[in-house]
Length: 187
Figure 1 (tube, rainbow, N blue to C red):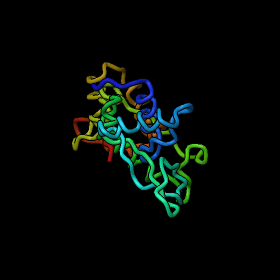
Figure 2: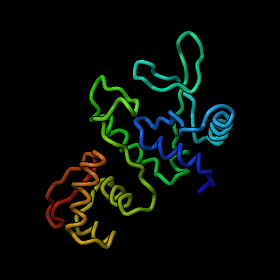
Figure 3: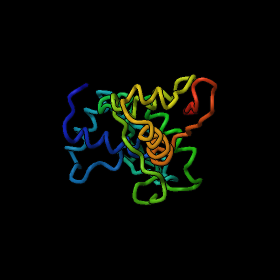
């Protein structure tokens, strides 16, 4: 894992919790030359990308380009990997949340209290292991999840219904299969 400064870690962690991995607004106290230097280094390393801002959605601007247009910053897959988030998991969470987002809702953090809170997922955690198991075409039964995590069955079921379905908003389905019992899948 690359070595990040505290400021870079804060920027990427906040971006991972925002819709579309939006890195703006930057942390309080980071402005002027310090902000420009930090962002430039992160763009050079491929952790941030400068994209055209959607003013209609209320996206905060990084810089103005003239004629009422501007750019904003988003975290890239490399940036998410730098803080330990698996890009596959992060994109699955982003897609699921976009499907649940209300049309016409603003994306600015202060204007969207009813939007679900995005959670940063770290690689190597049991939650990431369960998501990987459920993303397989054959899915996973509770017994397989228990074997992979060393949890009890009720804890695995609670993780699926609480953390994955409710908190992360992932579309987890279940179907009974002969010989395996209830098999859970994300899809």
